Image (cartoon, rainbow, N blue to C red; front, side, top):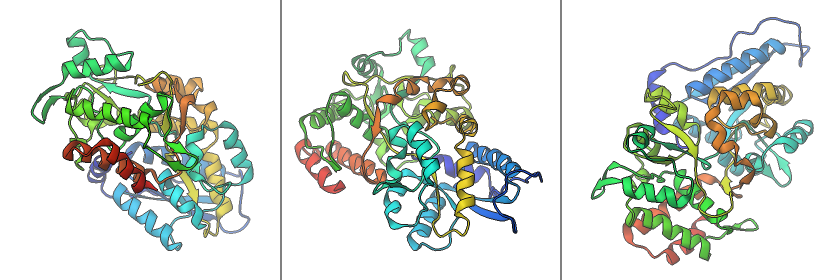
Length: 424
């Protein structure tokens, strides 16, 4: 998920928030080392809910394992991404524990830079996790990272509740109802919009909307491990998405311009009616736009284009251990602690995210604490791993292809052939 604006804001709001592990209480509990206390360096990015949840987990871990100290270093997102990838490329220095995006894991897992997941922990996760959350960590039968969330960018959408109430409109139950509502209620002069009826244009929303349209129609874009979008269903659904901008005029492609204002921001600014995004966007609305879930906006099920409730998801945020660390055992001890159901529930509640473990996602405590997650929880079983690729490359290629069709009238037949070439 692209959160440049959020992280930039946080960086400005929280200067000096280079977090360090919380003070441990000196108790006599689990011990890993009989010698000097072990200090593990943990790299993460600046984001208030994440940093608060990290501090809580670390305090609890250090209380249980007083001979291990977690030293956290948190960076603004762009700096963090560059720092992590530079460290992984050089295979020197860096952290003992990396917070890691699945796309990065896919590229670096084959390089030997990560410690493989211990068998006992891996078997536990394979039994209890949804398929998409582990996909990017796997290489040649081994796994090199673990998931902390289920990254779902399909299944639910933000809606402008005051607009629906004011115009006595009902939330759509079908795809056709959604597009009809969007078309009738979009307001624009040329390419300038006062109200975007259905803003599916963003680095995440456009690719995952298209992939779900293909899958829910009974199609596929994968032939083994090879991506192929030169199929009748892929081209027919892509034409629909093009028509929504050029014919129905439900939004524009400003969301692909690189602007820090994303599609869900327009809804929080009362300039969009419906926006497909993950539930992580809800705390953003409440904390950064000072509006309330259930009052200024709602989160409702996203209708499926076809008859099957199938969609694609990528491996989101997880944790990995540096294979060069002198303390891999202690590092995995900490990660195993984070993945305990009682800890994973609170972490995903604090961060407003979907848990990666089936037992945790449907735990009554989580469901009660995060009621807006229900639209996505109801369709988790229909998700499949997006495929073996750095998803940043896949999403950028799809977005570039779409912009080329809209701006240059490139024929869809030619566009999908080029897309296939770009991502192989």
